[in-house]
Length: 465
Image (tube, rainbow, N blue to C red):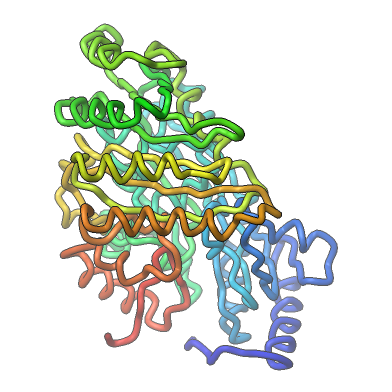
């Protein structure tokens, strides 16, 4: 199979109608076009600012449906995209005028306590696997929002509060089933298709459709943690204290920091430490956290891991408009602290936030060449999220706030940035973030998807270049 030129007008309509008919004949799952009941709801994503209109939505029920959908989309010359959790803020899960392989119904999780692994389907959300693992006394490596899809998180890298103890989400991927652009379903693991497996760990969704993943999970039910909130006037002190703590933090301690907008009130600064070791050994760090003083809420104490893993669920509620930007900082210095605190004071969108994700410990000890994820030195990921209600007349100003903060941090940042948070206009910067791995990653792309059927986050070029 080869790629086809982009279709438009009557040709697109005919191709979409033909593809839909073929999909309905071949798939066990539902197939929707714009005139069908349920289409409008099926194309809604977390970020309500996204208004993409796919030609066909194919709700896959398993790997056979995915194989058939890839084949049919290509036979009819239609571009395709893959929807899992649907939390890419730029809406790349929904291809305008294309075929969407909707995996959002594939949410089965099977945990094997004896091997410390979980088998998950391609549409599983973080909360699904966290809940299933907790029932057996284990925890997966995820972020801090339970609704986010595990597949997309893992393909991009996957920062979280267990990074120090257990690495990134991609470091805990053991194997995957992948439907390739030519319609073949293969296993990617250290033994089978090892180059593909290497690329899947941080290289984005550029190589195929992951219908299932095998993940390492870790013995863990409770942690020492707590969301500590501070008034904005303490912002610089909070960030300086964070810098002091993370400079010495052992693997067991990973610490987020940042700012929340508060509707009709001044923003708040926060620290979110998580200790994944023996509870008694957290005492010195509890004392150091208390040394800062001035917290208006929060306590560093023993809590279920499930509780911490969903602390930011409310900050990504469905139906809001969102613009996101990102930078990697090697550390916090006085200049970057000033940029961040000044931006927090200007944070006008009522549901916005600035989140500093701590990368160290086990995540930093993975040799850079072992996975596609390119940055293995200690650093902070800055997640910039402007979020507001539909109809807010200041929407463009909120977007510009996020973009300005990213620009203001550029002079203090490392090259590249976290692909999962970048916009469609930042693919060159994302590629730069793969560092010495970029050349190999592009070679894997040319081998497994030479016609660039899959456009992941970030999109990688194919061809001979």
